[in-house]
Every structure is written in C-alpha cells, then in structure tokens.
Image (cartoon, rainbow, N blue to C red):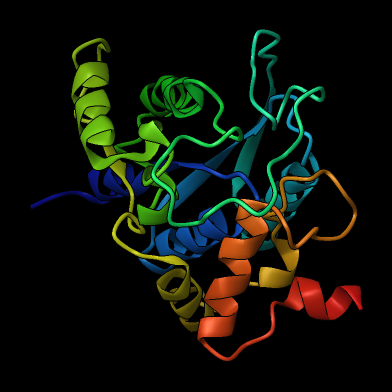
Length: 228
C-alpha cells in the first residue's frame, strides 16, 4: 500500500503554461484530476507578450506555484520573435507546410527546462497543451517527437520515470473549447493572437483557429465580445 507521501509525489507535476487557450484547458484539466502543479512560464521575446501576463494570472487564479523564465533566441527567424518578419495573414489553415510562426526547437527548449524542474522538485509528470492542429504544422508538437523526447530525457537524468502528458493531443479547437467549458476555464483570461496588439487581430492563424472553434459551437469568444 502506498503511503500518503508517495501518493502526493506521484501527483506532483510541472505544467508548461503559455497563457493561451490550450494551455489553460490543460491547466484546468490537470487540476480537476488532483495534480499538484508547478507552472513554468516563458518570456522568450515573443511579440504576443500579453500571453505571459495571462499565464501568470491563470496560475494565481488556481493557486499554484509558478516560475517565469526570461530567455532570448536572438538567432530566430520566426515571425513571433523577429520583428522584421511579418506575421502571416490569410494562410490556408489546412496547409501542412511549416508556418513562419514556427520557433525552431521551442518545445525542445521548454521541455528541457521542464525536465530539469521536474527532476528537482521530484515531479513525476509534465503537462503540455500540444494538440492535433499544432502538429499539422509544428514538428515539435507531433506525438512521435513527444514520445521520443520523453524517452531521451529520462535517459539523461538521475531521477528518471518522468512522463510527458499531452491530454489535448488528439483534439481540435472545437473539442478543446468544449472541454474547457466543462471545466469552467475562464477563456476571457487567455490570449491566442500572434500579432502583438491589444485586441485580437482576427487575421493570424491562431486567431482564426480559435474563432473557428467557438463558431463551430455557436459561441462567441469572450475576447471578441469584450473588445467591442
């Protein structure tokens, strides 16, 4: 029989919290099932820095510890970081090519930090909000990457057995929003727009995927409603 201490250690987890819709749903999903979470939030020079403020607020709302890491990727040629590259608008959302908003190695970097934190605090699990619409264009959201990276990291740490959990992996935005509503996720406190503006631009890929999800359910995105 497991003692209370070992049970608590098994529930101890790290969550990569961006402040976006997907990571917020992942946060509330993990909280529902009793995981003892520590949030890892990154400020990496992204033009949509507003998401970082949302992440901190979400962590505070559910009462979990959080770390905010400031890192730089000065070599990046992603439209999310390099201000000389325009965020693409009107892109075919069914396209399988890698978009200009892809940040090379971002999830590799984030998950590496997450494994370091998880090993230090004796966490058994890392939550990430990756899902099917991301891995159609972003190679570091694909299931085979997540599985392989988990295996590789556990071979390189002293306290292994840490799992990566991606509970939204096979869900689209409609599915994710449906789950979020069931979990009472405060979508008004999330941010998805890539453009770095005060209001959602409604033209970037992230805004359009989000809008499609709400519209498919006959709902109005609270960020759109509240910006009018």
